[in-house]
Each structure stands twice: as structure tokens, then as C-alpha cells.
Image (tube, rainbow, N blue to C red; front, side, top):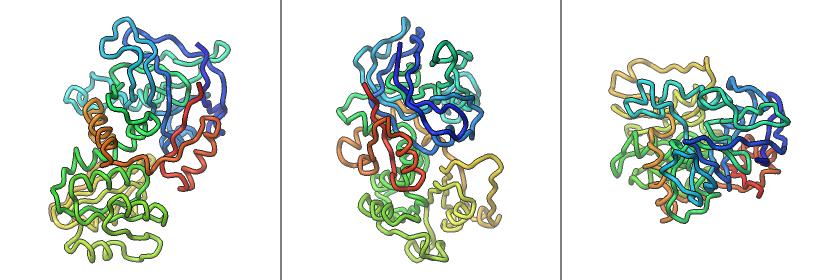
Length: 367
């Protein structure tokens, strides 16, 4: 079938709106009419060739829409179901067998290979392949194919152009707090970087009852929003020479928890150094291969922990509906982060995201 999609013709080139051919769903797949898709740094990293995905390519990995057809073996969904498309996992590797799907050992190929697991392509133009299956969805198109294993049925009435933001950034930040840290009410947390992931962590910390909640960023408008969303204290990174000392003034012996979203080594060092003994720092920022960070070894000898988290350690079929319920009840107002754009304006959305002007761009797909 013919669809409208945003295509990157070659590495680091602007997105181009084009008409493509989309294949039919296989027995375990869904044809999804995409209503909206978030745009995040991962999509821009794909555009700019950080991953081995070939070009021309269709990106997008935070898609939400409506099922229009199901494969012959499909049992979990029916046409008309509202769905969010989540991250892929192979189901066969050691981590998947241990139900650690976010750490699938084959995730790189599934997310960035440009094809289904068997090497077949979803999109084409004039008989030539257009590489896609980004996170096994490529949601920057009016329709796409999704494997039903990675789709989440949405049962509440949260608008799809809001709930799509939960697919990656929302569940990554919130899951780091609610699934990994599991803080008790009254425990302190410092969030370094309050973009989509950081603000999602902050809102989850508020749900958990953390106090104080300290937000650190270089953008004044983001710090203002962080305060409105639950931060008890905000720190303008550009106006302080000793961030750790400032956090210690607020939290006493240091923060029980910290979240680092920038992937800047010096900031990670501060996120570790601000911890109280036995505190935990979670790295959520996505650094390029070869990026190194250092900290003093005695820091760990005091029981501190530093660990990375992917996709919030979440099981999307369980965690996304929980977050959507929080959104519906006003406890997780992720809509406050969102700026909507039409698909035709995707390059403006990308520029606004890169500059920090837009916290969470969400694209509305044409139909």
C-alpha cells in the first residue's frame, strides 16, 4: 500500500516527505495507522549515522495509532484497537530468557539494522528498498508494520498524540525511578538534565513521594517547568561552579538517588559525587562508543552504586498502561512537555529539539 513517510535519503541529510510502498503484515504482525509519533535524540542520532542502519531510511520509535489489519496468527489485537509500539527484543538470548528484555543481546540489530530480524524490508520505492524497521516500527509514516509482541493495547482515553511520548523517553525516566530505584517517601533525588527523560524521572519521583527533588539544567525555561512539575529545588548549571556543594546544602549528606541524562562525563562525575553513602546513581544519557568517565574509587567503597538503565527496566505491556493511567489522572502530566508538529514540519521539530526550544516534539501524521 502507498503511505506518506519522512525519509532520510543519506547520512545527516534533512528529512524529506515522500510516498513509499509498505509491505503487507505477516502472520504475527499488525498494520498500524500511525496517529502520532514522538521525536527524540535517538531518531536524530539515526539520521546522522550514529548507528549502522543503511540509507535511505525511515526513523521513528515512539509511535501510537490504530490497528487496521492483523496477521493470520494474531490473537492479541483486533482492528480498531488503539496501540502504542514499544521497543523490540529477540526472546531467545540469555537476557530475554531471564525476562530482562530491555537488555536483549540482539537489540542493536533489531533497533538499528534497517530490516526485520530475517533481513526483509518493510518499505520500498519504485521496487528499491527503503530501510526502516527502526526499533521494529519506523513510525514516521502514515502507516507502518509492527510485530504484535512489541505492541501495547491502550484501554484508557488518553489522546494518542500525548501517550506516544511514553514509548521511550517517558518510560525510560519514570521506569528508572519506579522500577529500579524504588525510592521511599521522603528520600532525596537529584535529576541532572530535565528534558523528556529527566522530567519523566522527576514526575515519577513526585509520585513516589521523594523529598527533596532537585532539578539541574542549563535551560531556565526547563527549570521553571521542573518546578511546576514537582521539583522542590532547581539549580541553574550555568550559574554555579560547585554543583555538588549546592546539592549537599539542600540534601545534607548528599542525595540518596541521582539521575544523569546528559551523557556528559563531567556531569556523570557530579551525579556520582553528590550521592550520600549507599546512594545510587542511574545513567540514562546515551553516550557514543568510546566515551569515558572517571570518579574516585573510595566513592564506591562507601556503598554507592552506579548503573545504567535502558527503557526504564520496564515491561511495556504492564508499565505503559500504568503510566497512561497516571497521565489520565493528572499525576504524570507529560502533555506539559509536548510541542506538536505536523509531519511536514519534521525538520523544524528536529531543530527545535536539538536547540532545547522544544522539550518533547510530537509529530501528527497525515491521513
